[in-house]
Length: 167
Image 1: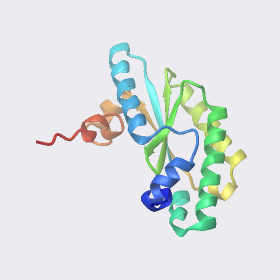
Image 2 (image 1 turned 90 degrees about the horizontal axis):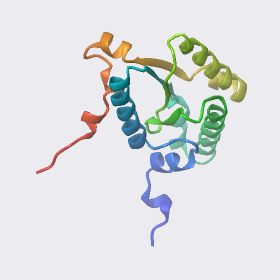
Image 3 (image 1 turned 90 degrees about the vertical axis):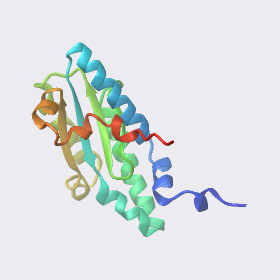
Image 4 (image 1 turned 135 degrees about the vertical axis):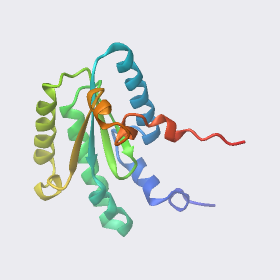
């Protein structure tokens, strides 16, 4: 008989251990839904991506390193939960590498306020050297998508890449 740890990859167990985040598939589905809603309503939204790959790279080292990475990510997601609205969607943008937060119905003026709030939250709840290594990028829809052309549009249009038709 197999134990669950023998079947799952380190990335799978890490995903299960980190709390307060929806799966990558669910996050991308909700991002697609919000994009379509925005196209109908004209109300903008922002996607914030938090690059945590330097934290999660420790999980493959085993034992204490993985436990430390999970603890750090759980502290971060708990803090993010407290500083964001219930309607803001938090999930894996790329499992084990980046966390996405979908901020709906915010104004362009509110963008800097949100960024500052998130940075302060990370500095207050994590070790400073860890918090400073978290890469934060923000993407505004629909304004930025039109400006990007074919560049980073996969952030806003994740659905076509996820579809594969097999004959």
